[in-house]
Length: 74
Length: 536
Image (cartoon, rainbow over all chains, first blue to last red; front, side):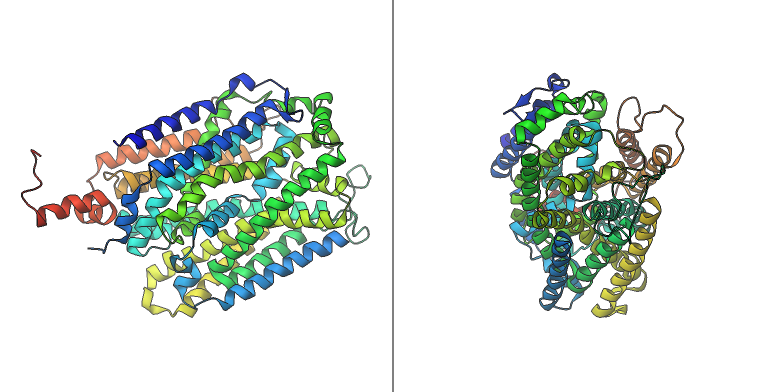
C-alpha cells in the first residue's frame, strides 16, 4: 500500500475517534461567549475534516481511475 | 405582505430559470438526463451540496436542536462532513469512472450489468422509489410548514385556526401547509420539466447561494433581536427548559456513535448517483470532497444555535404545535423587516426545492431507463417520447407524495422521517461497496442483501413510526442504545458476504468490465506472455 494512502487511513481513523468527545458531554460552557463548547468542538471538527480531505486529495488522489475511465472499452 | 411578495418573486425567478435552461437544451435524452457529462467543479459542488441539504437540514435541524439540543450537530452535521466526503472520494469517483466507461445513467443500470442480472434492476427499482418517497415527504412537509409559519396572520379571515381549547392557534392566518406544499411541488415540476437535469443543476446552484447567504443573514438578524450572540446564548443557560439544550444531556453515547452509519446513505441515493455521472472528469470531484464539510458547517451551526435560542425564547410548545415550525416562528416573530423576512423565507424554500428537483428528475430517469427502455428496448422510443415518459412518471409520484404529505402533515416529524429514509439507503451501502471493491460479490449475494435490507428496515420503521407505542416508551427507537441503522447495515453486510461466498463467483468477462486491475491482469498475458507468471 502506498504511504499517502496508509497515512490517509490512519488520519481517517483518528478523526473518527476524535468525533466522540465524551469529555464535552455535560459541559454548558460558552466558547467566545456564545457557542456551547460541544457545538464549538464539532464546528472545529468540520473544519478539520475539510483540511483532512484537502490533504487526501492532494497526496492520495486515485489518478489511475481517471485513466481507466478514458481507456477504450474491450 | 411584502415578505410574501418577495417569496412569490423568487418562485417566479425559478420559473424563468427553467425557461432559460430549456433554451440551452440539445433536445436529446442524454442532455435531459445527465447534461452530456459536462459539469465542472463549482457546479458539481453546488449541485451536490444543494441536493444533500434539504428541509431536513434547515427546518428539521432547528426543530431537533429545539427539542434535543446541540448534540444534533454531532449526530448529523459533523458525521456527514467526514463520511459524505469519504463516500464521494471512495465510491463516487469509481462509479463516475464506470458510468463514463460504459455510458450508464442510473444506479439500477449499473447494478444490473455489474451482477449480470436483470432481476436486480427490477428488485432494486421499487425499493429505491419507496425509500425516496419519505425523502420527498420531508421536503414537501417542511416547505408547507415553513410557509404557514412565515405567513401567519397575513390571511386572518381566509385561514383562521384555533386550538382545541378555543384560543387562536399561533399560526392562525398563515397559508395552510397543504396549499404551500402544492405550490412548491408545482414550481419544481415546472423547471424540471422544462430544463431537465440542466435546469435542476442551475436552480441548485442559484438556490444554494441563496439559502447559504440568507441563512447567515437570518442568523445575524435573530441574534441581534435577542440582544446579540452572547446574550442569546446566555438566556439559554438561564432557562431551566433550555439549559440542557446547551449540552448533550439525555443523549446516549451509543446513539451518538452509531449515527455515523446514517450518512452512508449518500452512497446509495439515486439522485446523487445521477449527479456524480454529470461530472466532466474525476478531478471535478476534488472541490466537492474538500468543501462539503465546511459548507455543512456554514449551514448547520446557525440552525442549531437558532434551535437552542428558540428553546429559551419560546419555551415548551403547547398542544397542536410542531417543532417543524420553529425556524419559521423565530424568523417571523423576530425579524420584523418584511424584506429580510421574505428573503429568508425564499432561502429556506430554496434549500428544500434544491433537493426536490434532483429527486423528481432522478425518479423520471429511473423509470424511463430501468423499466420502460429495459422492457421495450432503446430504439422503440424517440428522444422526445423518452422525455415525455419521464415527465409522466414524475407527475404520478409527486401526486402520490403530495397525497401522503396532506395525510401526514400534522403528525410526521421531519427529522425522524429524514433519519428513517437515510437509514434505508444506508442499509444498502454494503451493496455498492461490494459492487465497487469486492470482486467476489455475486448476484445472489446482492439480491439477498437488498431483500434483507428491505425486510429489516420495514419491520423497524413500522415499530418506530407506524405502530402505537405504549405510554412512557422512548420517542426514538433505539436497539441496545444504538441507532436502528446499525442493525440494518450489519444484517445487510453479513448477508452480502455470506451468500456471495456460498455462490459461484462472477465470470471473468464481468470482472474485466468493472475492475481496472482485472483488465490489466487479463490483458497482459495476451501481449507479453513472458512478463507475467506465478513466480514474479
